[in-house]
Length: 233
View 1 (cartoon, helix red, strand yellow):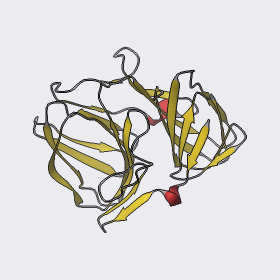
View 2: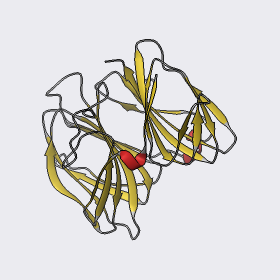
View 3: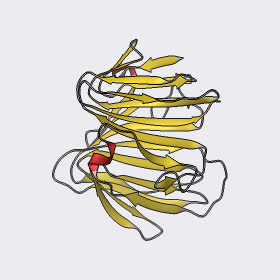
């Protein structure tokens, strides 16, 4: 089963320095029909103005991933980390028993990033932070396995049965993605236009719920896509 959520129909808030589209209920956007998708709790598509950002604030018992699409993002936290990431790179934080962090765009141009929250399979773990700086070409015309519950399967490990893959597919090319029985996935069309299973068209910013259905993904223009796969709930 495939269910599309067009970008234009997502939750939206524009604070001037921050322009956010919400795939699920978050902050001032509340939709009782869009609270989560399995263990996936938050997908925010954020535009952040230069020299602005989120000041120090706290989280606990949440697995948080940021995927930088353009520009840069500087992370700081109460564990002593201070890192700046750029387009195509990712950072991961397991908030666990509690951590404070900040996120700023100290660059000279607007930044865009996905903020993804996943409900953990255990509470109160020791907080962790990590970042991933990878060549962009590892995701070109092939799925790159970014997140897994198994440390040996992907460079980022989460405290949850969830896999995340990213792909940059050139126009005219095709890729497949398996969503096995008992599994589901959420697709984020970051950039470009694509046709899924010859029946669903996706464009910039769209979301797609997938339940127990394999995907044939055809790029109509150059495409950038992010998939979050998990157990069906």
